[in-house]
Image (cartoon, rainbow, N blue to C red; front, top):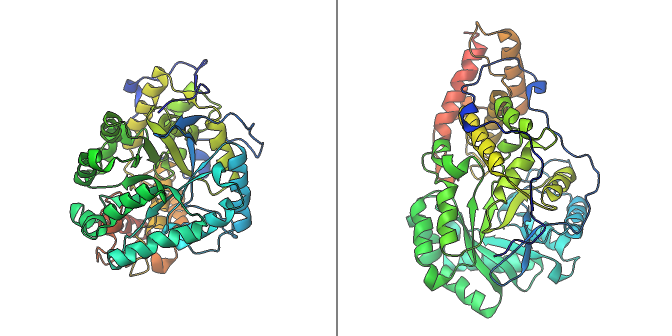
Length: 466
């Protein structure tokens, strides 16, 4: 792969804080949104077109370094369609796709499972309004449910993608979520024993698939196994989770995760292009704690916190594209601006991102990226929103440490009121019975029942005013 010339070096930056400046544990303080690190996000101003950074795939085609992730499409209520509760706002999807293509974005990543099955259909409508040579579409054979592991059921999913996307060939086809579930056993049943992988290889030979790859979560044995077959299969790309925290510290986030540095290096050795997912770690790197934000703001006060994560994801030369789920037009515009063109990180900036990562790790957040794979809960819990409320309050310093804490009464009330507003009472953590239905579905390998018990215990302590 090549990097086009519109990838520049940073010319001006203030002296960075070194790795030794990492600040330790959170000092619990006042509870209000003003405590969250301020963002400097552009308003709705248009971004100049013609400046997008591109990388070349193995066929020599130019792929925009910003990939349009289609998991969080906008709805008519203005929220994300990720959980499928609301109808997708097709008019807004069309508008955002038009803007993206006009500003150089040409990689669109969807799945039959995204937006509760609505994503492919919506993207088919939006993209079919454009010439087929204006975009590359990536989708997945998302046979997650055991009832879809048969060859017949998997082929039905595969063929339906062509219908929904309104195409006669798919540019990038992925085996979806390799390493999830029971690792190698699940991989065997989803793609190997039923002959689906062999079928997809033949579809690539026939031209109905242009590039074949897989997305990886979880069990490293699955990743290593599929790479061991590279000479036979000839993977065209692989999608991995990579950001400046997971680069060296993925196992600190979750012991079952694998450092992105290892994943990237193994792909680089084999000259396999890399597609990046979770550059913002499920959105957490767009709204980091004040201590971490201060490290980055000291380098460049005008840069948004999110832009640092996107610049890191695009820093490595084998990265083909960086996926971002952009529900709102302002997010799309900001990300286009970050990559138009991509400004390469300096060594000092890389050191500062590592320092920020270390301070982020000091905060005991639940490592949930709100992917919704754990949903629906058989007992009605709103798992992602329970974790989101807890993480938000921890990030902005609003969790009361104990009854002797400064502003304890104010913090206690704010947390409990916010909890009830965010999560209906019948869907809160105290209704978890530890059935473990959610655990095998979590790409981050979170022990969800254990975390529910921890949060419920904390909530009960606040309610009892202990």
